[in-house]
Amino acid sequence: MNRHSYNAIVKEWDAARSTLFSHETAFLDRLLINLQPPAKILDLGCGTGRPIAEFLLRRGFRVTGVDQAEELLSLARQRYPEGRWLQSSMESFESDEDYDGAVIWDSLFHLPREHHENVLRKVVGSLRPGAKLMLTVGGSDHPAFTDTMYGHTFFYDSFTPEQTVLILQNLGASIESADFINPPTTGRDKGRYGIVASVA
Ligand SMILES: C[S@@+](CC[C@H](N)C(=O)[O-])C[C@H]1O[C@@H](n2cnc3c(N)ncnc32)[C@H](O)[C@@H]1O
Image (cartoon, rainbow, N blue to C red; front, side, top):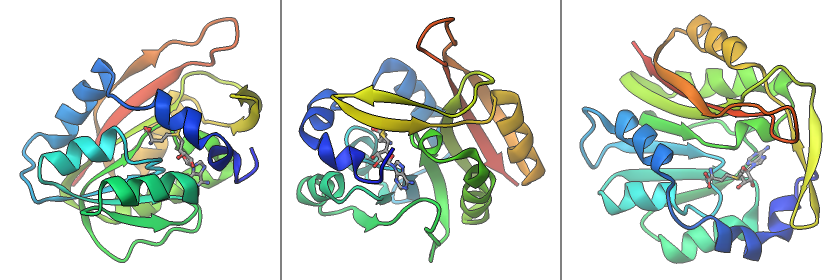
């Protein structure tokens, strides 16, 4: 993926990504157990802020959204001025705050896997004791690949679910729940796996 791919599909992406899927609501419910507004949540790879940051902001949570695609962030800034929107790559993002929860939803798998542990280390390190993180990773053992979306090329790479779970555990996080969102097929779909982890 070149770094501007999401900018190039902002209209199509924004139209397609407007409401939460039921599995996402279930993950958000797990993230928010025991968390009261105005707790602070980091959303890494937040896109337009819709629908995840929107869901959180409407419930009174404070959200810091980080994304490298300025066109997507621009929509987030217009629609949700109460959010804090930072343009940065996930690889270079350094948090200046602690958070009560974090979301890395459908974004980590756009980075080469050599960056995944560092990103997870930074996020786990920015979470307060007891805070939870919800994330997705790829659902199978597959080398990095590219695919097209709305005529543009996107890069994907992921450790297996088991390897990601191990990385999180080695960083001191405990797995609260983890499951396939969609299992891999023998065809185009390499699968997607969702994890909720907590820090001690
Ligand atoms: C599939 S979208 C998901 C957006 C949002 N999390 C959601 O659930 O709708 C992937 C997002 O990750 C962002 N992204 C991809 N690679 C990134 C990187 N290296 N650093 C920061 N953001 C990145 C893209 O710009 C895009 O907004």
